[in-house]
Length: 152
Ligand SMILES: [Zn+2]
Ligand SMILES: [Zn+2]
Image 1 (cartoon, rainbow, N blue to C red):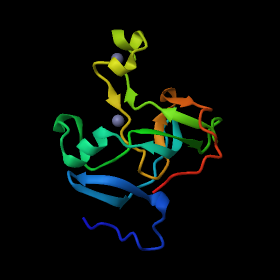
Image 2 (image 1 turned 60 degrees about the horizontal axis):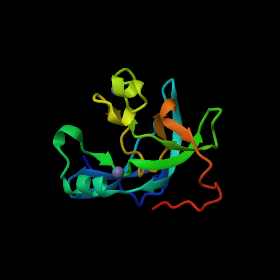
Image 3 (image 1 turned 60 degrees about the vertical axis):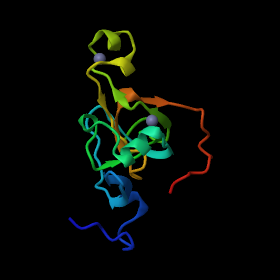
Image 4 (image 1 turned 180 degrees about the horizontal axis):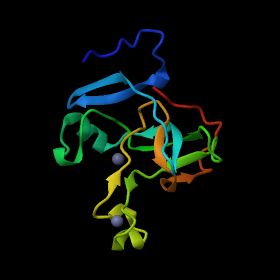
C-alpha cells in the first residue's frame, strides 16, 4: 500500500490523521469518513491531550494484546457535536472506556473498572469527526467556544 500524497489539493486537513502505522512510524495518513450508527453522535475533535500512553504506543511498549496498529494518537479529547443531532454545536467530553453496563462495577457507576470493557479508540488526532456512543459524551460548558482551535 502506498502512502497518499498529502501535497495534493484534493486531500484536506479534515481527511488526515496522525497515525502510528507501526512502532516508530508516525505519519499523516488519509482517513475515510465515518458515519454514526444508531445511538451514536458525530463529534469533531478540537482539543486533544497526548499523554505517556501515546508515547508508549509510538515506542511499541504497550502489550500487543491491547493494541492494534495502525491507530491514531489522542485518546483524551473533547470536541463539538456535528451532523444531524439535537446536540449539534455543543461541546462534549467523550469517555474513552465503554463499560459492559452489566457487571457489578458498571452497576455501581464505576465503568472505568469494568472487567470486560471496550475502548472507543483514539480519534483525537484523526482530524475528522469521530463516532461516539451518546451515553459516553458529556456536555461541558467549561471551555468557551471562542477559544482558539489548536490543530496541527
Ligand atoms: Zn492517556
Ligand atoms: Zn462492566
